[in-house]
Amino acid sequence: MKDFFKGVRRHIGKLDADHLRTEYARLADEAVSLDTLFMTIAQGIIVLDENGEIVKSNPAAHDLLGMDPADALGSLAVPLGKASKREMDVTYPEKRALEVQTVPMDSGTLVYLRDITSERERTEEELRAGATRAVRDLAAGVAHEIGNPLNALSLNLQLLKRSHADDPEIEECIRQVDRLGNILKGFLQALRPSKPNLAPGYVAEPVKGCLALMKQQLEQRSISVTLDLHGAIPPVAIDKEQMEQVFFNLVKNAMEAIRDGGAIDIDISSDDNDVIVRLADDGLGMEPEQVAHLFEPYRTTKSHGTGLGLMITARIVRDHGGDIAVESRPGEGTTFTIRLPRLERRIRALN
Ligand code: ADP
Ligand code: MG
Image 1 (cartoon, helix red, strand yellow):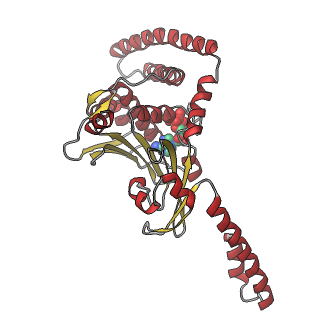
Image 2 (cartoon, helix red, strand yellow):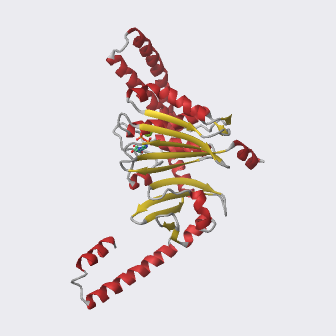
Image 3 (cartoon, helix red, strand yellow):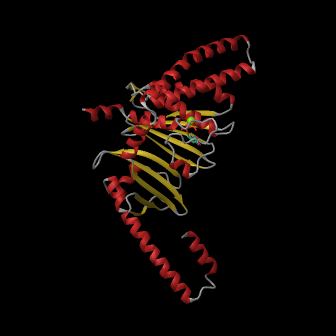
């Protein structure tokens, strides 16, 4: 349709009345069929103008949200003019998982809503059934067995490093052993996700833990990291180890997306319901198509990537009762936002 308009604009001087009438009729037909599609499609569509006001929305958007889209806009918190993707759980009129995607347009933003309740169940089911139980246990067993000698290697390498400070070959061995360790960890987690061991705590702790763990790598690449805490951040129910894994995955991805000398900004705040962690990098960013498939397993753009990091990350966040969202623009950077329900809200919800 865009091309059609461009064509008409280019040739409008040459088009005679008859010609224009035919083109107009064709366009009118197309508009009617697009409108029918818009009104009947199962996916929810909301069109926003540059100021974020609703231009139009379809009945499916209303059904999926369980309310007038205008009343839901606040909690959808869609970023304007950016590609983004987010999964959220809605409880009304029934408990379902929704995918919210935005696509930037010339004169506004398109919001696209999809019910992914059964798809999510299916993906997890497929992943579980992907290997038969026996093969899976065998693989997990082998992976576990590799873990022990790997730990020993790592320890010995650290000792060697002390007596041979700055030996580049030892440094390289340490890096490779670390990499193997990470692959193993990801593999084991993907095979056997463990439910989080939730206890009251502060989300800043695993963030700081992860940054301490990665300090050396970040310094080596002159990547600056800021951590801002806005006011007194209330506690959440948290499995510190798993949450550390979440931030490790996100910071690692950010590091891999930015050039030396880039920046990672982490910001922790809270509202009436949630504690909110935003992690922004000024790296490569992603195309809207890439954002659309994020959090799906085995989607990697890296030659050494596993494409499991974000899937595991999203699962851990969900197991904490929270949600994770991403916004990105190619060439500008990427921001991940994690929301975890405030502890007192969770306790209220359980009573
Ligand atoms: P892996 O890092 O092994 O590729 P992930 O699940 O962690 O797997 O990430 C999947 C893909 O998402 C990456 O390959 C990359 O293309 C993209 N990605 C993730 N985080 C970022 C980011 N901060 N900036 C740009 N691209 C990212
Ligand atoms: Mg990764």
